[in-house]
Amino acid sequence: MTIDCSHLKSIDCSHLKSIDRSHLTAIDRSHLTAIDRSHLMSINRSHLMSINCYHLMSIDSFNLNQFL
Image (cartoon, rainbow, N blue to C red; front, side, top):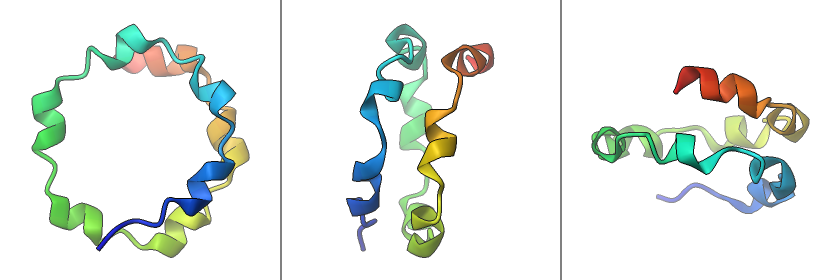
């Protein structure tokens, strides 16, 4: 079972590029691999498609940095 990524294409990548990559690389990859794939497959696709892309684009990278 795969997640339909077609709706993700509408996300404006220019906003994502402003995220400081050094903060992303600080994430411990071992934590990511510990995610149970069966949980990911149970995600309801209709919920993903209902995400408002405007809200994603409005994420302030400064706020993200505070969590890392």
